[in-house]
Every structure is written in structure tokens, then in C-alpha cells.
Length: 152
Image (tube, rainbow, N blue to C red; front, side, top):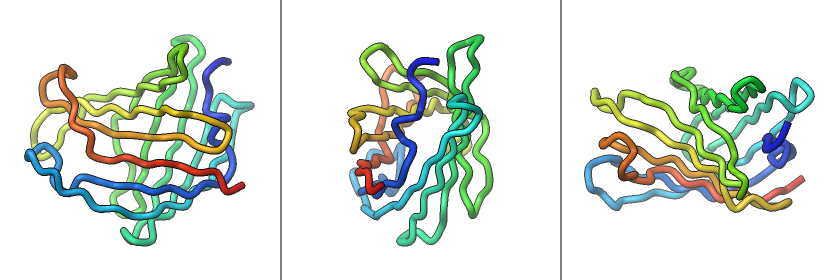
């Protein structure tokens, strides 16, 4: 299986920032720290990570599963306060190492597309970004960015 999430196995710290009011034209961001541990399951066909966000007062969990028939990953985000976010983000890594994972969702009562991008992946660092689109994916507004540094 190519392009899996084995790069993320281990422990990480992250500098994260979120847009306070997505899809309003706001440029008001806030920053916080995350601490993450990630492990592989199903011989690499699955991945789980738990992130602690002490400044925000909650934890998150991502469960990732690989479907070899479609060569796609499904990413399920679970928030310790609100539960699982459905539908999952679905996608894959391209030949350049950029992971793109998409879902159709409802935000503030309106249909949107959400994308997760995994990029800048090295042995000791990586970047994750979430963005929303209200025009079917023609344009994107980034609203959550995490810069990860390996700690173990």
C-alpha cells in the first residue's frame, strides 16, 4: 500500500491556529498548542491519532481507514465534546506527497465542501490544513492550520 499515514506514527507537538469566524470575511486567528500521539493499525491500512488541545479544553481523535479497492483513505474526526464528525474526509496522497481529503458538509446551515491537506511531510515535521468552500471547490478559505514537529 503506497502513501499511507505511517509517517505520522509517533508523538508530536504542534503549533495550531484557527480562524475565529470562518466564511465571514474575517482574518481574526487565534493560536494554541497541540500534543499528539499516533499509532498504526491493520498492518498500516489504518491509523489513529489522539490530540490534546489543553488551551481549548478538549481532545480530538482521528481514525483513518484505507480502502485498497479505491486506493482511498477515509478520515473520521472525533471531538471529545461533540462526538464524531460525519461524513468522513475521503482522498489520497498524490505522487508529490500532497494528501487531499474532501467531504460535503453543512456549516452554519449551508452546504459546503471541506478539504484537509497534508503536506510538507518530512521525517520530523508535517503540515495539516483545513479549508472550506462555498462554491463547490472553486475557491477555498483556510480556517485551521497545524504545523507538526516530532517529539518521539
